[in-house]
Amino acid sequence: VPELPDVETVARRLRRALVGQRIRRVNVLTPPTIRSHAPASFARRLRGRTVKSVERRGKYLLIHLSGNLVLVAHLRMTGDFEVVAREENLHPSTRVIFAANAREVRFVDQRRFGHMDLVAQKDLSTFPGLRSLGIEPLSAEFTLSRLRELLQDRRGSVKSVLLRQDLIAGIGNIYADEILWQARLHPARAVDTLSAPQLRRLHRQIRRVLARATRLLSRYGSAVGDLLEVRERGGHCPRCGRRLAVETTAGRTTYYCPHCQRK
Ligand SMILES: [Zn+2]
Image (cartoon, rainbow, N blue to C red; front, side, top):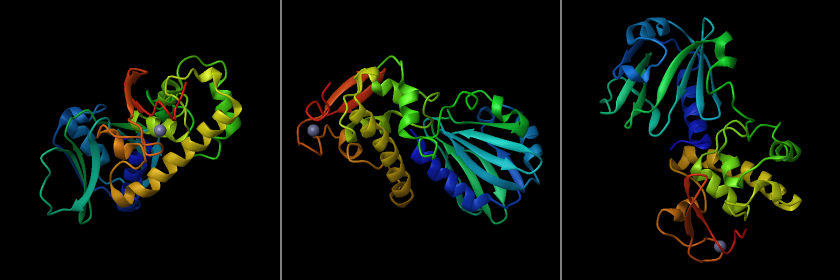
């Protein structure tokens, strides 16, 4: 499931392929992917527009177009944008095709949960999903004192708080586990009991884990992290060698090391 590093990687790919390009043609192969318009109307509104910029916000992709329109896309479970030559064979899960010059940008989505909306620039700040998004963890504004403020008087486990998109945007199940393992914090630890050094470790690892994965993903193409590499294989802790525990925390399957991540 795509999280911040994955979506950021897609944003960079789209930026390189599309910024400054004019959209020549749009084919909607799977109409439910487009939520805001009927397929023909969606294609007509996009045709001829120039891509101004591509931005990521949380797990959303924002493609800014001429005429103050924004294409807002969410990859959900299996969505991805591929950039290919026009003559390239269609992947069977291709949902939408955007043709720009000799290349095509294709939205491929096996599970079909991904979606797109065409939104007027002025309506972006009230768009459901974007409206309530929390702080960007890789932004300069995400300081230790800001994290402390966010967690003040907050109830629940540290993992459940990391997953809340309205507090910190872009972290999902996989990277939450990686961050907590790196910070040596138990996922079920009550967030209002973290000591000052623990809070500092948490802040440092949120930034480090996400920045590192974002940097390396474009090169290696799959999830990047020390715990991530062993978790699915019933693995052992990369730090102490003991067997990882699997529990449900915050309603999600959670991997952690009972020795290194004590409550
Ligand atoms: Zn360990």
